[in-house]
Length: 295
Image (cartoon, rainbow, N blue to C red; front, side, top):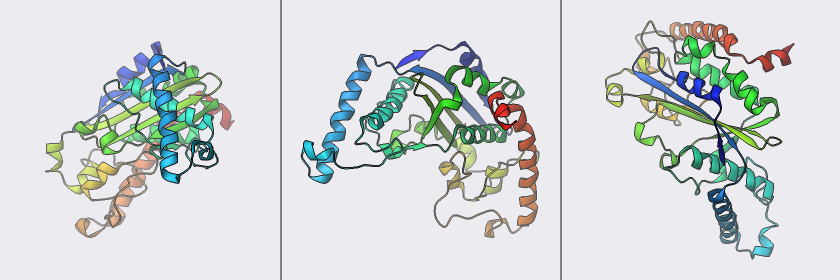
């Protein structure tokens, strides 16, 4: 993968690093563009993945190499029996290797990636996440998505995401509160834009912070918009982008036994007000090409 030096991305990256509204956490984001032209290391990686695919298939099914091509393995990229599907997976792994040169992602499996429903879904998810944590005015006014569209033509993209396991997360040592990793792939341009972002926190402070504060912040902070409002601290480690906070089965929700001092209805009202504010602010971050499509 060949790194593409995009001037507008350099400016955006400087604005994608900012403290959250409460000041006890920090958001670190990065945009990178890559050409899918294979370099020497990429060719070696591709051969390795192809050999690994064949070996895994033979081991799982007890088939000969000739028979293995008849087995249909589903993945976010399509059946892995098709070379185009395996090459798509290779592109994403090669992008991760290029973006995090100190790590080796060659052992990743297809099920660690997800194909997003649409680019618009991804844009809404990212906007909501950044606005929830105090997106600065400079970033709101930066026309971020229009600059990304200039590079990759988002309307023509397939969008994939990567949710790392603990052992595959290059930021695991930081203990991120949440993170996302999106790939915008334009097949005709043979180009990928990689958008990675995480929120880090002082872990010592978490031990002395109430469950309600972890979700809603201080009284003067805007609440975090989620579809579910877990009160267990472990839920913060399971945050996913687009679907609210993911937490273990049996996890408590807002208004449960741990929140007897404040009615659930009052907290739900706070969340509703916050959502109204977020929706208003998100208008300034709606890219021009989406506004055109709505007309």
